[in-house]
Length: 171
Image (tube, rainbow, N blue to C red; front, side, top):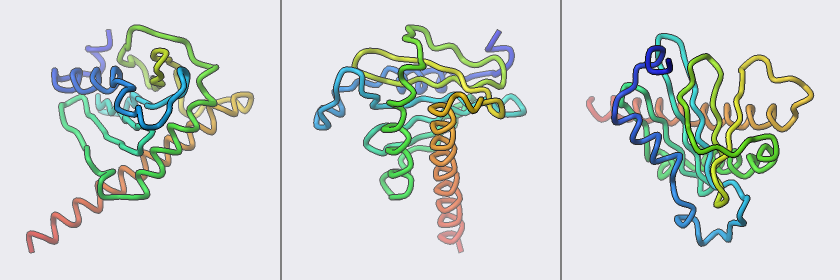
């Protein structure tokens, strides 16, 4: 059972659920078509029972949520590189949409495989990425994986910059 493998807090389940069900109307100024991806939610299982969920939206917003209830949010308001990486990921996710299946349930991973949810006005679509085994016959998945790693890397860089700033302000 997923909960046995990745212990989760109520806060994590709530924020993850809100991200997956985020309404498209918040992007009404962007003229989204029915099947345009406006958000990407990726569950990233890690060692030591850590589960991270990365959320990116077409406007460049990007947040991380952790199964222990922690989060890293709001960096997009301060870091332009993050906005660009998140936006590129979401826009390019449209190429992956035909390879996804429409879903109405949003399971938490029970293995190291990563759940990818694509948010559209027409519903939520899912695919699974098994890191390290993305076949060359899946160029859309490979490109998406590279772009999502770039967004994740930008989030990590932002976290480090914020931590350094915080440390400097204490001196």
